[in-house]
Image: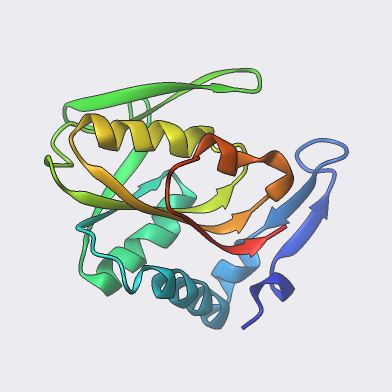
Length: 170
């Protein structure tokens, strides 16, 4: 299935001049959602890994069903203060300000091989912070898979050195 035909373009969102690529039509269609998950899973088929990590919230949407399908554990990466147990955190810069992402301190054991799954590669800041958290725990980032890559924002450069796969490029 050509997922680009399902994604909805919304001009001037969230601000004038921005063309937003809306994935909710994929999520609303069982066939399109399954096709998206299948295409991501195909990119992971030959990799050896132990866990899938996904940043909130859309990384959860794609990462959890993949973890179930592939019989892997799932690590939720959340904004500061949202996880109930002991956490480790990494702050990163946004265009205006700063954000912090956290995972549970015991989510990854040294030597664990982790795949990160998310919906969008834009500037790469969130994913870079998650990579650093994984590595600080002794884990290894085996691959990063995105449904969409916005090439003009050059997020790949922020993630240089990592194995990056994308399903759709704009």
